[in-house]
Image 1 (cartoon, rainbow, N blue to C red):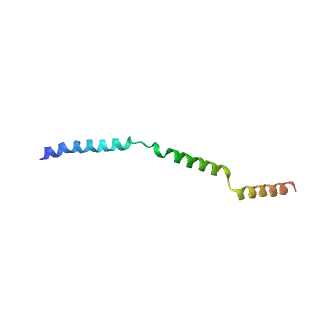
Image 2: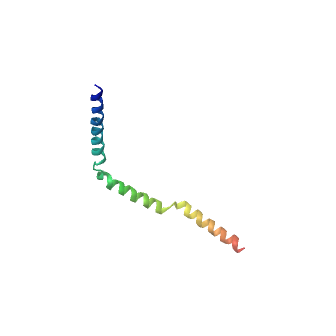
Image 3: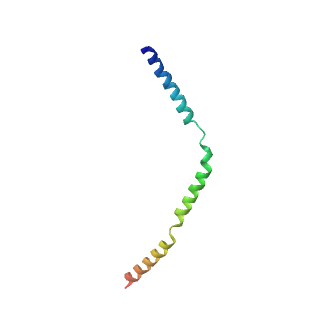
Length: 70
């Protein structure tokens, strides 16, 4: 009986390896188009910046210039 157990261990390992190999080799290209579109929207959003922040930065620069010149 012990020898049978030792023979079953490599059998289960081979079955597990086959399952893992089929899972690792699966086709993952189905969601690439939507992921790329999401990434493009992310890049566009990061490039725009905050509309209120740009005005606040411009006001701060203007105040800094008036203080430096005085």
